[in-house]
Length: 295
Image 1: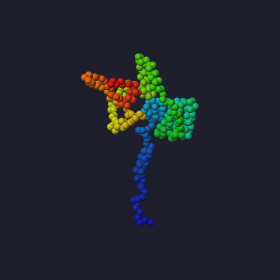
Image 2 (image 1 turned 45 degrees about the vertical axis):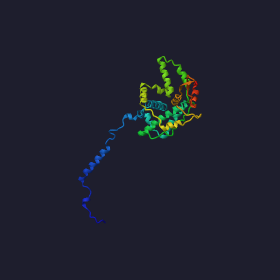
Image 3 (image 1 turned 135 degrees about the horizontal axis):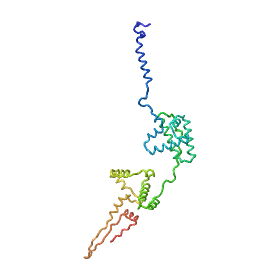
Image 4 (image 1 turned 180 degrees about the vertical axis):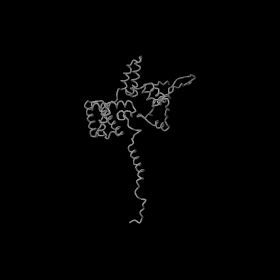
C-alpha cells in the first residue's frame, strides 16, 4: 500500500465540467469535416494530362511533334481521338498491361515499315507522357521494359561534293529575284550545314543579330608561348608550317633591288630579285610562278 493519503480532489470531474470537454470535441469534429484544397483545388483542365504536359514544353516544334505522336498512338489503339477518359484509362493500367499495349503498338509501327528513328520518336513520346503523369500522381507504372529500336547508321554521310554543288549553283539565273533567292538558299544550306527546316525559319532579324554579335566579338590573340610552339611545327619536307597569312607575309620579303655600278668609267644600272628561301621556292613551285632574276 502507498503511504500517500487519498485526496478527494482527484475524483472524476463533475457533471458541470463536461461542457468544456464537449465543446472541444465539437470543435475537433468541425475541423475534420472542413473542406480541404480551398485555394489549390484541382481544376477540370488539369484532368487533361496531355494538354498539361504539352503546356510545359517550351519549344513549339517539339510540342507539335509530341501532340501528333500521342494522337497517333491513341487513335491506333482505341479507334477514336484521345480524350480525358481514354488517356486516364491508359495511365491507370497495371504496369504489365501498359507494357503489353505499348509493345503491341510498336509491332504495328514496325509492320507498316517505319524507320527505326520514327518508331523510337513515337515510343519516346508515350514514355514522356507516362513519366509526366507519374509526377502528377495519376500513374503508378513505368515503361522501362519497352526498349527502343537500334538505329542503323548510314554508310555514307558525305553528301554532295563541292564540285557538284558548285555546278548546280552556276546554273541558277541570278538576274531574277527568284534566282537570287535560290542562290542564297543553296549557299546557306551547303556552306553552313543547315537543315531545310532551319533555313525556312530564318529572317532578317537573324542576319542583323549575327552581324551585331560578330561586331561585338573581340578577336583573341595568340600568346607568345603559343606563337613559339607554332614556329616549331615542321612539314614532311622539314619546312616550317605556315598559315595563309604568314605565308603571304613570308613571300612579301622577296624584293626587287636596283643596283648601280661603274665599270671603267661606264655606269650600269640593273635589277636583281632576291633569291627565294627553300620555303618560298616551294610555295612558288606550287603556285606555278617563276621569278626571273636579272643579273
